[in-house]
Image (cartoon, rainbow, N blue to C red):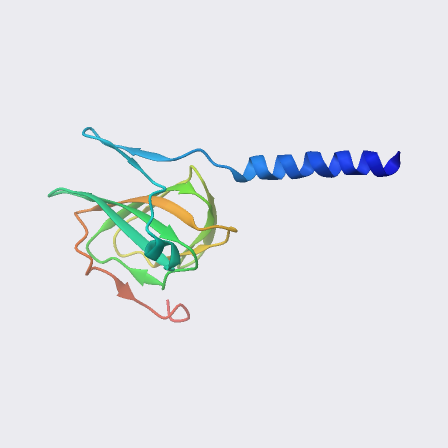
Length: 148
């Protein structure tokens, strides 16, 4: 009887674990269309950092960023950055502190601030990032994390 009870508890735990691991699809809503977050290519899934460029205007650009490991410490000298965590868990490192992030958290990083993100979850983290002005891919000054 004890064995049957333990098997029942184990079965319930497995179902709960599998249900918790399933996540609803995330969409990014734009006036013209909704963009699914989960459509990453096989090559993207193998990268430490994968970026999808979504929209670019004169004043801002928006991107989806998938992070498996960590990015290198850096500054953006000409761009403000706002990040919304859509999926996963990570830590954002600043010059004088760190902050644990989870889905739903929003981070604002004004230009000139040292930072870097590190994925801490089992799977990759996915964020929606908005740069202002539009990011040109060049405004990223890397710094040794020990020389902040």
